[in-house]
Image (cartoon, rainbow, N blue to C red):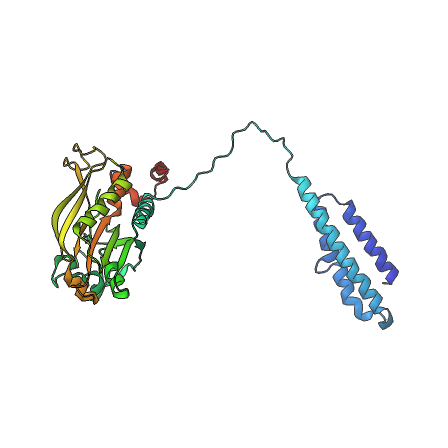
Length: 338
Ligand code: DAH
């Protein structure tokens, strides 16, 4: 092929693109000119037969053709595709399309709100792993070696030293081991116990732990006041708070904390088993034995701790009658949380 013939082919190919209107025709042109057996690649192969003196001009023209053809083809293809779109009239009176909007899960919501309330009281959020050592979860928390909570029927053990934490109290140990006093933390997180699942129990649930230890005196009165503040912020001004003496290995004295039932406002109903109160937290003054385990001097520090059930709070705050709703991820349930 001579240079002149090459130029004629170049012009012809562009004319063909210009004349084509449908994508199928444009596709056929692409195959004809650029395909594996197409004209342009074929000419590139023939370059070696062109007399050396003519080769630069020949090569330059071939390159220019290819670039021009590809560009024309791309532009025309875009135009052809746009033209092929349906051009039905747009009805502005049609109702808009509705898209389901996600909601924050009630458990996450209580965790966020609780963390926020304690943040306002000067607590920072601490974290710990779900897989814990026996020491962090039990021993350092002054749990007696044969305490029933350590039984394999209550706790998921991996081996004699490793388990799925049964309480976020394990983060108390971690925090004190890693930091000198003062510490003021809350730790929300998952806990695991070998419980059979029913309306109020789950083998996997959430707690939020609190720990305040300082070299300046803090007392049970401080603990009561922050928990009462928390109750009002979380449940509203009308909530009542009750402290009952109790026992925990890691606090002395210990209390259990009840809020007035949100469903019946304390009158007594099915949810609170007619007592008018719902148990929300365990709490107390940190036991000196715990300080010894984490290397604090029990004579130099004062502290309180508390731990509460997230699901409990979510259930009474949002009137959820069965804990299982919280784990089924049924949108019909979740969308009510908007
Ligand atoms: N960890 C306890 C439980 O799971 C709750 C608790 C009680 C936490 C007293 C505390 C505390 O920090 O001081 O039942």
